[in-house]
Amino acid sequence: MQERIVSEVLVIGSGIAGCVCALTLAEEGVPCTIITAGERLSHGNTELAQGGIVFEAEGDAPSILEQDILTAGWNHNYVKAVRQLCELGPEILQELFINKLKIPFNQRKPGDWYLTKEGGHSLPRILYCDDHTGRNIMECLAKAVSEHPNITVLTKRTAIDVLTTHHHSTHMDFKYSLANSCVGAYVFNEASGEVETLLSRYTVLATGGIGQVYLHTTNTASSIGSGVAMAHRAGAKLLNCEYVQFHPTALYAGKRGGQRFLVSEAVRGEGAVLVDGCGDPFMHRYDERADLAPRDIVTRAIMDVMLKSGEDCVYLDAANNIDKDIAKRFPTITERCKDMGMDITREPIPVVPAAHYFCGGVLADLHGKTTLKRLYAVGECSCTGVHGANRLASTSLLEGLVWGVQSGRDIASRISHSEPMSNKLRDSIRDWVSAGDVHNDDPALINQDWATIRNTMWNYVGISRSTARLHRAFSDLRMLAKNLQDFYKNTPLTKPLIDLFHGCQTAYVVTMSAMRNKESKGCHFRADD
Image (tube, rainbow, N blue to C red; front, side, top):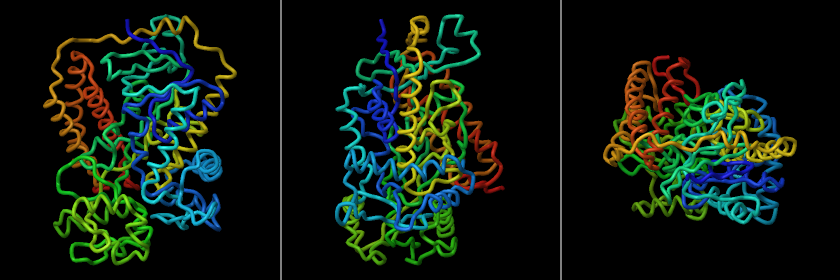
């Protein structure tokens, strides 16, 4: 008998958005369950965030931040969502992160914050904890979530599919209903090797990004687009999936693919300058904002310099351009470079672009609601419209915070005015049925399929795209998706197999979106536009 777990709300993912949503629900008196694929809550991308989180500068105003976001996003943004972020963000940050959780942001004295400036911002409004802001945020959030009596934390759980009344109910009353509702998820328990049925009145996707479908990325291993893939299969609407932001400055450590260490944009915000192999600055030739231009512009400039020079990287010169104590301001970056034999106080840092942030995702409104009833999406897996065609630096943590709170409050309000899940519905949801027992999940096959996905996405659906490249990617991924579908049906589930299936579907979705959009804008650059 498979285990069935019933909760009021199921939160899938434990980064800033998922944890804040769970905490908000718990504080409103709503019991909830949060699942994470790792052994601990803080194993995702939030923990890696270096630069900081948008707050407010002296002389700042919501309208000024709004204009910066719209400019960076190529005015492809949803203005109402941008306005919500700008108006509510600083207030929520002050209340939850500063007053309540007491996250140790850098300050000269109590309440006198150090604020830095990053690319695309007109004012220094970035609040930070040295260069490990995400780590400090997640330490405080994970502690609060783990200790709250209204929150159940389940670790080493990987969501397979969201459950819906149309797809998974056996009762004709729900099959013939026009409304399709989400009622939880099938979840793989890595410890037991079993699939659990987690039933819930509301489900929140907070699964993070998609960077691992690319050969070079700053993202953690769990960032394979699982939320996007699951929502797509369930019939929820996706939007802007072609807009994948590449961070211009990931530490170059040779041609080997995989996760790359991020060199924060805050380094350029403090004065560091990008230079070519001869030590000559070049960003002024590409944009009047030079090294503080938005990320899409800086990324394409770096690629252009690399292509013209034939070199494998460019360099970020902090040693000759930052007056502050670099090692003290950026201890994590300094230490990582030191481990690789580099002294950034004396020599430039070799950097290359890498897949960093997904600006598209599951369409979500101002409260995080998706087009599938009772399913919410928050954080990087969602598309609220805040980022448009290109994300402004340090807005991702703030979006996760704001929509985490907004979704939690909205769900809590709805639960207080609605009936619990009926026994008829609960009993009609079938448990997971394993389709096969052919044990052919060979690691060599899985690794080869991942290599195909990552190389295809990097070469054909990467920083620069063309009709020919996209058609080649579409053809290759369609064939791989078909083969995986057959493979998936006949092989007992394992976490590597689930991740591969989700990653392939995500790559296919991004490629299809890129094919449909013929216009170059922001992160989506068509070389043949």
